[in-house]
Image (cartoon, rainbow over all chains, first blue to last red):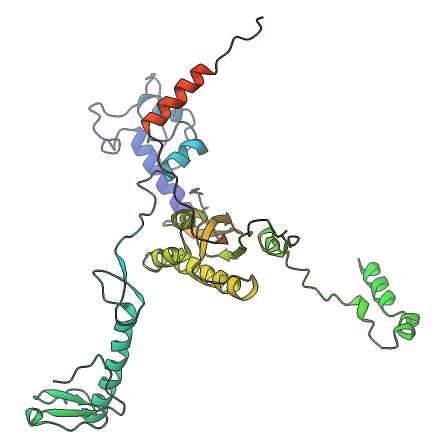
Length: 185
Length: 203
């Protein structure tokens, strides 16, 4: 619940009173949408005493407030409290409930669950970790930024020799057995 | 309260009690149980022990009650997840929760896994997949009111809400879903209601 509380800042109070004064005097016709008539008090009485004061705000115009509210439509507000039954009908409507997903399968590689149109999370994490280690090796070899050579890279695992196809390519060694999912050329 | 405290201290330090127990610190005065935290009703449901079943009776399925308190989430938002998994088998529920984007889904998944583990270890459940969710509910936790600052020095009060989550797992396959009521059934019921009418206050 939002409760706006007036803080005791004098400048703020003065600003609000100026706005209120402008509203009453009809100097702010654009606030309430398209009303052809300018704003004014519903009852017009001759006499200087009823001219509303400006900044000094003599008596926050308690007499003007009801007249202003009578003449125009104020902001939209709920008229009645919504009962819990009505609230429940809205909150528990079938469109608002979570639908059950029918696109969940089992990954054939690792056996974890995966969505049909998405990569398996476990396998992706596995590949990501291996890539991170390969990148660390590359970083060690290069030694700094902007040192990437203009040749292809080949990753070789334990017990693997570079073939004749790999001539002229940069070779990165990884000290482990080749993972089953990383297929060699 | 100062006098009461002093009296309490002196009552603890009675010399005749020391001589009787033979030790310097009489153990009967010390609280051994964690009585500061109230044990909730849901946790106590796991403690009921049924009498042994007779040979002819059908086997009573195992029931496991588990809950998590003071989860930092709204009870209304959590309710949608609880409604999703009501009546599902535990595998299906875990699958649905794994791919749900909601914050409460992760929490409920942890609770279900904990409950499954408890079932296998303590409640004599043979197969961990042979469980289904009989009840899953949310409750209101402790709310805390805080100030939310707006512009121009205005402020509003916001409430930081927490919730509890309760789940009851029962051994066995999930019960088949109720078939939706057909028009024919409704018509039959209406005709039956008409036939049940009698004359009152007559001979």
